[in-house]
Image (cartoon, rainbow, N blue to C red):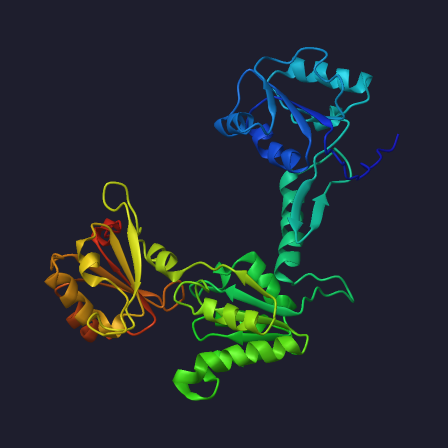
Length: 411
């Protein structure tokens, strides 16, 4: 007799009883989706993983702390059978068959009346992948297909013919520290849907090459009117293109709200009545040190980290940083945009009590192929920057965490 393929269907479980037998790793993986579906979940298991126990403590599931007993599937619409007892699994499966309850068996797919597909979501679309039969089922294969489809939908490389999601307005997208793989999934998708991209010099430039030919790319670093008027020109460009009904992405380096003037752009758009979506990005203040092997916090070494702008020297009237307070901190100090001011910054920190031998690391072009790290101390950092020709963009890390980087073994 020929084997028939499984029939795919979406179960609407809101308010309906679902019974889960076993509180181990299988339940831990499957419960979040059942909770998200709004199911009334009964867990029957003498033990559970800490994560599953936390779900019970939070009231997301009801937990009966005992082994399975016949009758536990009464009133259930769906059951997940995942205990470590084969006899209990078989008995529960037979109960499900007798009461017409669809049952998934984690230990024996051939004996199950339902299979769990490999699922993923992207912007309101659920992708579910099933093999056509129990024979030769390979969860890794279905998961790989699922991942490929979800990734394509998320980054915009997979789009249904004659259909392209397009939302007029502006998306303020944090592109991350430089490596194009470190932009968020949402940010990459919005890029793929854009009509116009206004890009910063420090944004992930490699992503621009992936854009379709019809997308207009505006280099924000080259907008006219000079340095002082550059932000006003960017604001005007965002407003003008959005008013034409276009989908505009403002692609910025790092996170839009970490020294990125993102709020200035949001305010300008709000004044013009333009809707704006803010997509956070991975800030270079944390990611670049991490890429160089430096933890900004470390148990027993630093319980705090502070991020400051170094674009003006400490004694400049425009500086809003309390440098004497920075010198008193015991944690990590991360300085952005401070390469050409680091000499004066170091002098100020030392003058207010910071030890001259405090370790300093400068990470240039972090997360990119050109990344390099230069180490110094507060006393030597100014000369080191000159001697090593350290250039922006570079993230400066000051504090004991700099010395926590493991030293590679020499051959």
